[in-house]
Length: 212
Image (cartoon, rainbow, N blue to C red; front, side):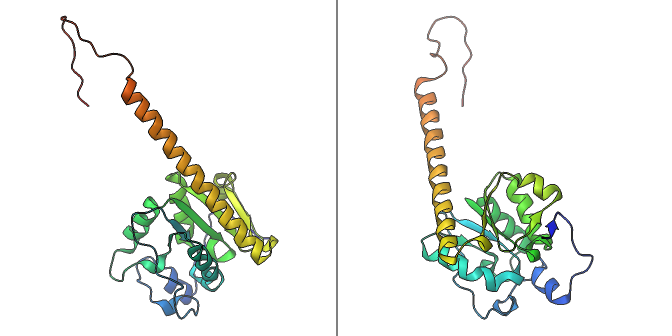
């Protein structure tokens, strides 16, 4: 099976450039022959998953993310970008604020500069990451190194029912883990503030007042 690192074709066909160019706003019919998007991308303050994918795989991944959405998860994907807004800025904002980064790995996505950039951004921001392999392929180079410990789901090895069940199970476990981490941090901070590292000085000698 093919291996992929961070390499790109020197020149992509016009139809790929059209959908992969970050400076273009996309209309629904530009996405691999898909007439309509499955649902509006999430816009709100609650936790959500950012979906990274190649537009050439839209007909393969839209049914999947629709099932994630129907299961109650907030899903953001780039069809939610309002025409006229700065594409790079909104992608960065959506990535920066997401609770979970889900990347559909395929031959198309690993040849997409946009998808690889999104992966790098998520790694640099220490996001929770799930890789869903659409194709039986292997990573190489820096991607293989940096994604070695990331949770992965191999769609081609599972039945459709087991695949969706596995995805939702992983989403739930990561959601619970994230909640426990936040609660534990809040507990530690609360305990620290309540008890303090030491008692405040109350004598008559000169002392330093600490404002914080």
